[in-house]
Amino acid sequence: MTDSGDREHDGDSPTARVETGSDGEPPAMTRFPVPDVDDLPEDLRERVREEAADAGFVPNVFLAYGYAPEHFRAFFGYYDAVVDSAELSREEIEMVVVTVSGANDCYYCNVAHGALLRLYGDDPLLADQLVANHRHADLSERRRTMLDFAVTLTENQARIDDAAVEALLEAGLSRREVWDVGAVTALFNLSNRMAQLADMRPDPEFHTMGRGGD
Image (cartoon, rainbow, N blue to C red):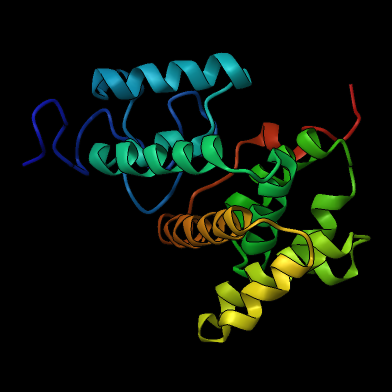
């Protein structure tokens, strides 16, 4: 039983969609049923409406997390707190997200946040470079050190010690920015793993966003 106002999870629900979306498009995820927006609790429906108004479509991650409303609230609450309070620029946040998601081979986040990086960074190439290998991108010392740190925290967190933090400080990050790099990295390691578990699929709109087309 879920909390008051939350739906119970029922894979046989007539409103759940797994194989195709209600509009015939591929589903938001394939391994768990995707609820219809109208069946979500009101606060989640309001967030979905806000996202649709902002983006022009509903990013599939919001539909996927609707499967577990209590997790939707916790995940996006923390996401908002990390992004809204960070001293990093939004471009740098998305650089960390894309680099971490590339290291984790996360299809959903590679595509979705690659699109956001193209928009916030006004650079059609950088996201693809970071997904493939951030070491091949043309980066400042500050940003290369920041992304090296994020990958180390992702792949071998035991190597994060005082010297690793000091390297970021010497590269020009403030101590709070170091915290922010770590918070974004940790959040998207969680996000990448949930996206892999659920087989979340990026919206078609993300593939072309910010590439300079019509």
